[in-house]
Figure 1 (cartoon, rainbow, N blue to C red):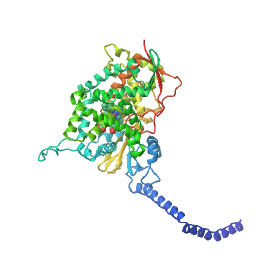
Figure 2: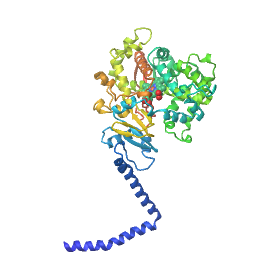
Figure 3: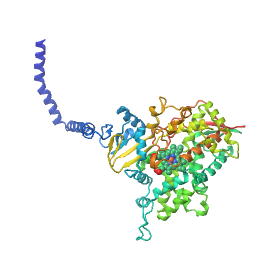
Figure 4: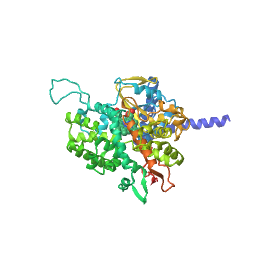
Length: 537
Ligand code: HEM
């Protein structure tokens, strides 16, 4: 035993120097090897510093989810499926839901997944968290000139009397305030909803549907086959456009809906700031819409006096600021996008759930039937949770499951949150899906569609983990309108038509999990469903 150990030791000690020499020779002879060895050492040293030493030195800073390529960070996984990356990071930190940090393309984001932290952040309105930087990024991304951006944030009158030092609210702020005034419950919202419902009643008619050849095929006299997503997109984009801009915009470009749909399905390329040579189709659609909007605003005002109060107010402000006509068209394009981007997705997912569960569909139909006692559909009846508990419960459950956006803020100074120090110059993200799929808030089946969830537990509506419309200063002002339009559509559709899958063996439409969204999740390309609508006797 001793001998063998001794002999092997001797052999090893005689071999070792020559082995080391071989390695040294290799390192110095091969420049590639040297390069890789030094790079690997530097990378390890950087990783040790970034993810072990720094957290030790700054224990109150949110911990960073480690990555291997400096600056690039988690860019690739973020592009592939941002929600998967966020879940992965949350679980890496043992699902404590403490704020953590992620680096994406050189930018550090603090991620909040605890409802208490999100609620506290929404309450902050003292300037330490700003949204303006994102508003500017969106304007640049859409092609507004630097001059136009400057004017959108201008707070004093530069065009006339310079001695007059009166401060104005800037255009971006006015947009927010006017949207809120147009969309908060009251007269202005009613002025919008009334004509929308009238138009909806007209368009939920087999003759009108027949005129939309691009997604309809005729089956027999009372029966049509439609692509569900296309049908709903057509109806809802048309409603939003007419309610806000009046009839003339669709007259300027009768193909507006389809153009917007092709822009919207690729709008993630704009959000990710793809180089223009990679996103020709999206840019072409955007330009077409922008041109239609430019032509619309060149029409004499009396040809578009059926536009909403909001559009009139914003046009007045834009003209006061003498914003160039191209920038004006892009501003209105941006508004058009926020008005029409999301709402159609809500009825699409609701109707899909109902079609795949005919028992619930029948219950919703019978529950909403009394809303048709008068001249048209009674939206107030539909919104009443006591009278239509199923319809309202399914609305809440659907937007909970399909909300896919995140509220974002920029830190203008260091601040304390959730026991951590968040540093100035970084960004904050509050992703809805991380809250909406919380088992603690919504139970073990949080990831499933449960039509009874909000009926069994109505207090869930006030749960701070439920944030489908964001919150704080950027909370969606269109939520009341979106809900009223959606409930009215569902009730009218069930009242007027029998709706079923055709062919019957189709799969439930797959959500486009990897696509970024500023509201509800989109359906995956090629996964729309074909449905048969038959006029009810
Ligand atoms: C189901 C339909 C809708 C959903 C799910 C939705 C969702 C959202 C979300 C998540 C935000 C960002 C909130 C945040 O940053 O905290 C937002 C913002 C906004 N939404 Fe909606 N939205 C819908 C319908 C509408 C409609 C119909 C309109 C207008 C007619 C509208 C107008 C806006 C505007 C103007 C903003 C920007 C608010 C701001 O930054 O101050 N939305 N929406």
